[in-house]
Length: 126
Image (tube, rainbow, N blue to C red; front, side, top):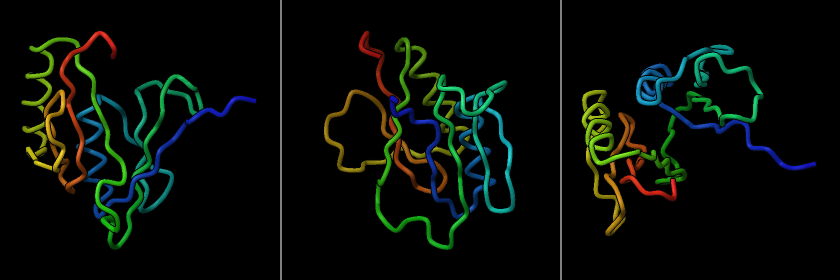
């Protein structure tokens, strides 16, 4: 049997606020399986459909125990798409950050809780 990644779990200080940011950023829906947990998944998604990897945001007292444990990279389809996406993410609360990444092929940002992610420049590889 082949291993299939279906879900990623992120720690959050405010799972609702962080969930709203990422739902808007990705164009996904929000749900909750109980207090302290927000589920992010594509609209119309039926878990555990292997077409997407869903995200759970779980409230914890101190989410930043290890810096940059996970780094999300968002692909873009054109220079205009990248510029528009970066602008929209900043409007949602993302901030530019220098995480010591050096010369990367894209824009590095942090979400409202300081989790670092990248909006990659368009490439055929993606």
